[in-house]
Image 1: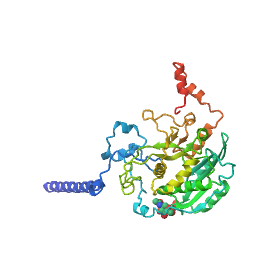
Image 2: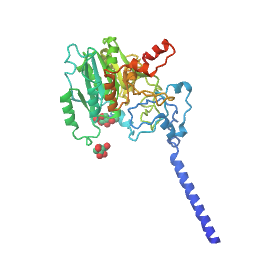
Image 3: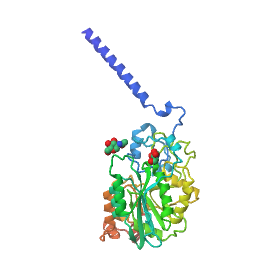
Image 4: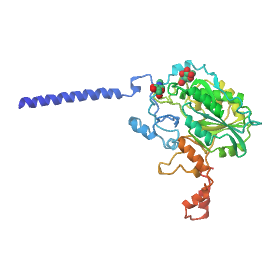
Length: 415
Ligand SMILES: *[C@@H]1O[C@H](CO)[C@@H](O)[C@H](O)[C@H]1NC(C)=O
Ligand SMILES: *[C@@H]1O[C@H](CO)[C@@H](O)[C@H](O)[C@H]1NC(C)=O
């Protein structure tokens, strides 16, 4: 009996020791990197990040906070109000291993061949098109291109103005995943005459190359265009509103309009997808830049930018790179409330609020992060002859105190 008790005690003791050593090794494993590398500066916790909805697997601020409880920031109230670009450090994306050394070494390699061109794109209409829609896409996203062609990216007349369209593409990163990609590109080009394909690998960090090459292409092959809309394929664009807005502007004057981000700070956290070391960008804030989801520029600004960007060093975040080019020509981009390139922010107090509402989209210009089916549906709802927004709102609000309240609800939510 005593022997068995003793044996049990020894067993328990051994187990406890094993558990402790296991805990110890785990703890050491979880020590933040910054502690092991004294050379690395402790990152500022309240970083202003480029919260880019294009980034796959990017966690919501809440998720990021939950995943890294030791990094809960003490955000000042004024900063917290600006939630759109203000979040905690994002959890690193799995494929975010970005080789800065190699990027810096290859930085001067910035001229790539145009494999598929549309040299006559802007020559079909006398005097040139009113608006050129240029959409960033990747070869694999055939379905996205198709839906854009059928909906807001249609070529032809909108409110009496001629619209033309091009897709901007590089070569696929994984060529074995879509073995027929070259045939597909040539077939699409023949069918739709809207493919521009350059000979660089289509990766997130090569989007700056896309920006440069597109501006150069536009200056050479589309100098007679009046305005350009450049954006992503996962946005909904109210092209009628865009045309109406542009009709009030002069294409021979400077114009750059979008969802402008001011005073964004470079991310100095190594694990972030948007990490930028000080050797690459030494200043503490980025110049004002437009969210890449969609923005407008005049013909005049396009020509100036295409020249200016040639003199700016390559920078791996394309939106910021264009901001640097804008700064170089001393042009202040204009913020327009109708550009929701970070998606519609639902108020936290009313998360059930229906934002997929055609009457709401009727007053917007660009909304980011829509699924293929949502783009199709929104376009059809907005173009339905039965759509009557003022009536709908009256039905929803059958009781009103006074006339003033009624006019307020009928007014567009965003100018
Ligand atoms: C490329 O795609 C193929 C087929 O989808 C896949 O098996 C392969 O792992 C991919 N390669 C890379 C490097 O991602
Ligand atoms: C950009 O494209 C070039 C040419 O295809 C390629 O060599 C390079 O690795 C790409 N860079 C990045 C960061 O993906």
